[in-house]
Length: 390
Image 1 (cartoon, rainbow, N blue to C red):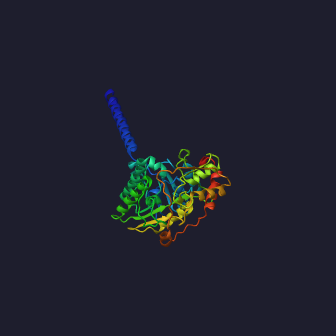
Image 2 (image 1 turned 60 degrees about the horizontal axis):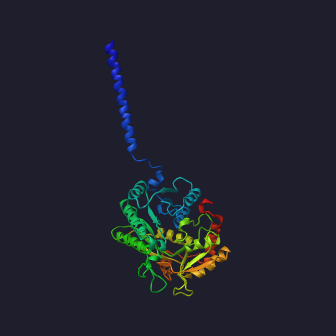
Image 3 (image 1 turned 120 degrees about the horizontal axis):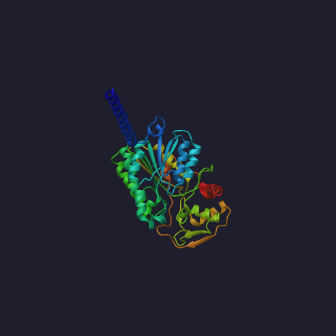
């Protein structure tokens, strides 16, 4: 009796140990397996739906692109490390389009090769709009290595991931800074590219990478070289809210608004001895709504195995002094102006010839009145004194 009872207890103990071992192995394997993808809508291609990866989609230009894509029924994934972008803009977009499968946000740095690979392996993209970049001329001259890494190296990683995962369409956000300071105006797509600052050089290198790779693939590529961006969403949903520490580097429109709101004591105009009509730099100011319209048209008309290169501008230049006068009228504030020496890396006069994009993509700038564009942007600034935080 004692022997039988002992044997039964021994068998029972072995079963418990075996069950515990199997459970432990299961838990171990479960923990090692990758986390499940939360929505198959983003991880699988769907007939009739174009899924666009928007890098830098939390930024000023990128967020406006996402808004337009969602409005036009695209599926969108934003990837942004929020170093220059705003989570507040993402929350606005999520609130406008809360339906499952419309919009997702992924926090990631495009300089992290493993993160980029994970993003592409877990999502089924049909196209990429690559906006993500640091983008200040003055900053690029002070921190050139940062610009070559952030723009050129990151673009290489994106193109490699697209190739590895068979993503066939790329809309690349480039700049007129790749032209440098041409001998004659206006700038056409055939104007020689001789950039004079690290920002323009890094962007040109990225273009070269994309164009060279396209010769060996069937990728559809559109490279949009755009000029000085202003304005904001006409319906007041999105605006420009740069980091406070970047105000010295930012766009002239942001500086004008900061001066009008009293955040800074006045506006600093750098350079009054250029060979222009009034001595200040001349630029082609393109409204962000028009700019994004060009991107959407480029996406719709991208063709496999072909590279389209387009200037996106109004075709006319305005001096910095003219811009400031328009800003004074738009804000109703007599902004104080200080005239300083030139900023390193700047050029005297740049404006586009938009004939090619007009003819081939049927795109024409509509918001060409400086005061009107600035008035729209000023309304958002006035209602959002702390940016997306209120």
